[in-house]
Image 1 (cartoon, protein in one colour):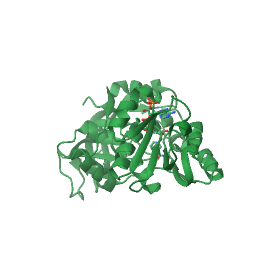
Image 2 (tube, rainbow, N blue to C red):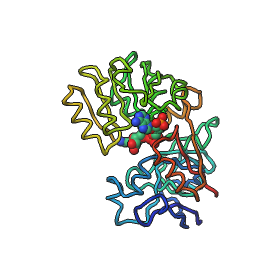
Image 3 (cartoon, rainbow, N blue to C red):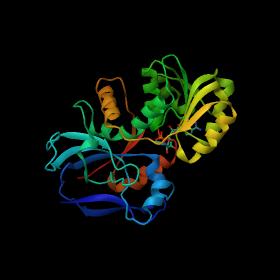
Image 4 (spheres, rainbow, N blue to C red):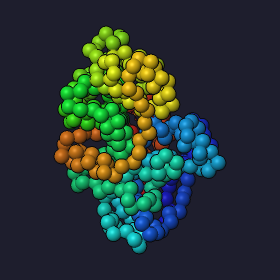
Length: 316
Ligand SMILES: NC(=O)c1ccc[n+]([C@@H]2O[C@H](COP(=O)([O-])OP(=O)(O)OC[C@H]3O[C@@H](n4cnc5c(N)ncnc54)[C@H](OP(=O)(O)O)[C@@H]3O)[C@@H](O)[C@H]2O)c1
């Protein structure tokens, strides 16, 4: 079966994303062929497309490369060893991370064990937006050992990871503060945080000290926010490119800081799908673009100002 994909044949700006035709192979053994309905778009997709980071370095001699790590769709066919999935089931997953990617495709063959069933009340669009961002939020809070009543400051509370992290931290019983621009104050407050306008002045003068900092911005912004953390407090800085610099400054300030690389977890994905289904978690989709307009989706994510998530919709 042939399908359309969005691929890069060279690193560059968003225009280097081009449609190509591919032939899907039949799933073997424990593999499943998924008809992808939506693919999530994440900042790492755009960074890798531009040739930045480890995944780009590892893939530079393997172009063309199809970006994307989040899929949601239906099972088209299963390999002979697959017992847990049947044709037509609605599934989603965090796939091919960090090297293979492949989600920007109407069809993809994946291992059966990386998929989760999508509950009836969760749309495939929501299910595609959740995996990478949701698991990053979940794991950042776990790494920081967030406990009930902790004061937790989340930088970029309106973004893909941030808007989920705010809700997950709130659900843990933490007192959540989150930064955003003035346009996003009401949105972030609606998720359960005390929203703080980062453009309204020095953060340190706006908030009382916190136990935990979840830094989703990095660089100078992450370093400046260290001044808001109590002595001996915990810091998790999520953008990998600036993690070393933020950690070094945190150490000087006497804080416990660490970076992280999200690791795919079906168990976490399923817990968050259940939370979406019962209304404990909401996912905000700022924009959906057809696969053929993937370049516009990348331009949107590269603004650094997206509220919630961006997804690609397959035409097939
Ligand atoms: N290490 C890992 O495993 C891992 C995994 C996932 C993501 N990441 C990284 O984590 C970062 C966040 O990812 P994401 O998907 O959440 O990105 P995103 O959705 O693109 O984040 C956009 C948000 O950032 C906010 N923002 C921009 N500048 C800000 C500032 N100075 N202070 C506070 N908020 C600001 C914007 O809010 P306003 O419009 O209100 O300014 C916007 O809502 C990215 O660098 C990404 O690459 C790393």
